[in-house]
Image 1 (tube, rainbow, N blue to C red):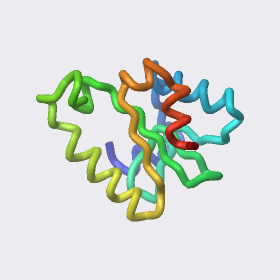
Image 2: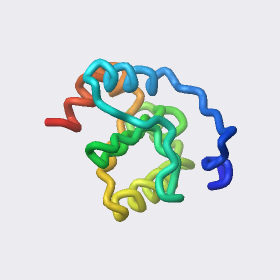
Image 3: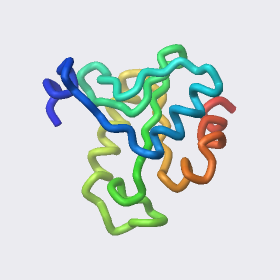
Image 4: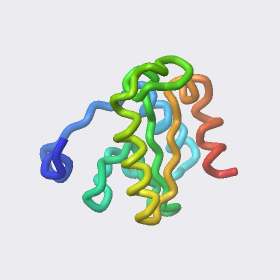
Length: 115
């Protein structure tokens, strides 16, 4: 998707089941977040926590090539790595969680960030 698409006031993204679980956990903990947030023309991120300069990406095991569940799928791996690298170089702390990690325990995912 283009930067123009991300910056469009008409953009609409459907929450995935794993994004909903992370959103519920952040809300439960009263952690301020922005969802599907365009960051400095680099990328649209799943969650941005402005008070901590943290980005959370929720990676589906199938589409993002989880080494445990879909190790042969490589299409997104390079794009994900470049995105993480650009965000990190811009000063953001990036956390990526696999679908199976979020489904197992969204609480533990958020604990990982704030330990």
